[in-house]
Image (tube, rainbow over all chains, first blue to last red):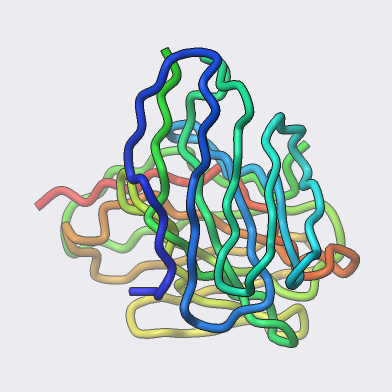
Length: 113
Length: 112
């Protein structure tokens, strides 16, 4: 099991609420990623970070934002949740200078009602 | 459009049989990786094959890569019920800066 953690595992919230999905890793990895995955579908990269104070948008447009103030922590925030945000959110990390093997957290399944 | 496309989308076999999944991609790559995902969980890295390699083995897994056809296959030999999961290929493109692009996945069911 990888040392990367996500909380909460499951979240049901109402439309318009602000939420933060937490992701932490204890492996000292510089690179961290957020993916969105609908059931039975492929992963879409929505944000990534190559180090502290570095964040970039991914391939899939997202209304979420991220921050990277500490190496081990990469939270994702939705300012105003909508039903279209219902999905699974997966956090991952990888070590710089390697061939890119990524370690995944268990995911947060978000339902917006 | 997705870099990786996998087939079949779903595969159902009996325990002890071999399972083969294929992945195709579009652009030049540094390496190709295979991941496994159990239902409702995160992905687990299985094996990585570099662009200058043609075949790689890890336990019951065998991966091939054909860069001329931009395709890869994952073979699981002597399958077990515990192999039931979704399997994804992911490509690390030459210009992607170690960002991975994932395929659509193959849902494998191994019946006891």
